[in-house]
Length: 446
Image (cartoon, rainbow, N blue to C red; front, side, top):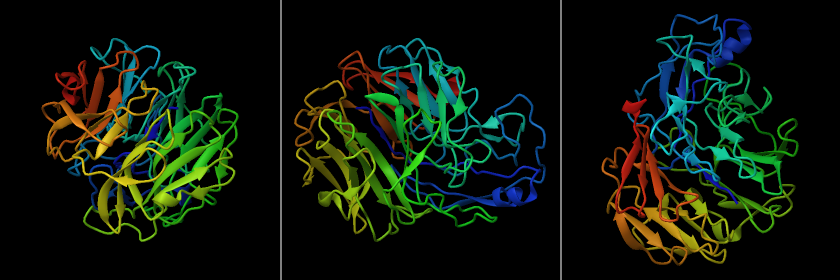
C-alpha cells in the first residue's frame, strides 16, 4: 500500500482572465489565501490585491490567462515549502522528484546530485514580475504509481474553487515527469490533497478534496464545491469521476488516505475540521469525525468508533496492517499523540509526535520519528509499532522551529537510508538512520 499524507498548505490565489466578465469577477480582486492543513503551524488569512496590469496573452507557457501574482515568499511561513511532495521511484532510487513552492517540480536522475525542472504542463497563475511565466504554488503530496513508475500523480496547487482554467485538480505525467496533463474536469473541485491507486488496477484512483468554502470574491464566494463527499474516484484512469458519499461538514479536510494492502476494497481517510485562517491557539470545529472507513471500495462509509471526536493533524499507517497507525490528534483543542496496533487508540508519552512507517518492513512494526518542535532534536526509531522509541541520530543542521522538517522518506532499496525534506527547498539524505546527513538540495542550488 502506498500512502500519502497531508501537510501545511498555502493555497494558490486563483484570479480571473480578461475574457468572460462574470468569471473574472469570481476569480479576481481582493483574494484571500487560506492555509488548509495544520501540519506544523497555522497562519491567519492573508489578503492579496490583484495588480492593475492584467496579462491577456500568454504564449507557449503554463501560465494561465489571469491576473499575475507576487511569486516569492512574503507571508513569513511560505518559504519554498516542499511538504510531503518528495518522492522516490520505488524501482530506481536514483530517480527522485520534489515539488517546490514558487519554483515548481524538479527531478533528479542521479540520486540527488543534480536537479532539473520537470513540470512542463502543470498549469499555474502568471508571475507579476514576468507574466509569461507560471508561478508554481504549493503542492501537498506526490504519488508514483508502483505498477508503472513512469506514471506520476500530483494533486494540489489551487484554492477551494472549480478547476476552471486547469489550475489545481490532479495532474498526471506518463513519461517520468517530462510532460503533464490535467485529469479533472473544469467543474470539479480544484483543491486536492492526497491520491492513491488500487494495487489491483492502477486505473482506479482515489483523490481527496475538502469542504472549505471559496474565500474569493465573486458569485462563488462562500461556495463549497462538493455535494456528497470529500473523496473522488475513477475506475477508468480519469476519463470519468464519481464523488464518493463520505458526507461532509464545512471546513472538514483530509489529512491521510490509506488502502488495506490485503483487501483494497477497504480504505480509510483521516479527517480534521479546521476553519480557514485558524491558528493553533484558536478553536477547530466542534464536530470532529476522526477516521472514516469504507469496506466496499467507497460505496458506503462509517466512522471508526475509536477515533470519533478527534481532529487528526498528522497520521501515518502501516502498509502491512491498516490497524497500525501513529498520529497527533486534537480533542477539545488539546493535542495528544496516539498509537494503535489493533485499531484501538493508546496514548503515547514519547517525545515523538511525527512518524513514518517503514514501507520495507513487512511486519508493520518499524517507524522512524521526530519531534516537530525540534525539542529534543533527535531522530528516533521504534521496532514495536510506536510503543517505545530509541534515539538513533540527530536532525540535520538547519532544522529549527522556524524551518521545521515536513516529511521523512525511506529509500526503497537501501534499508538504513532515510531522507528528510523541509522548506527552503531542502532535502537531506542519511545512509545510517540519522547518524550522518548529506544535503542534496536547497533553494540556492536551483
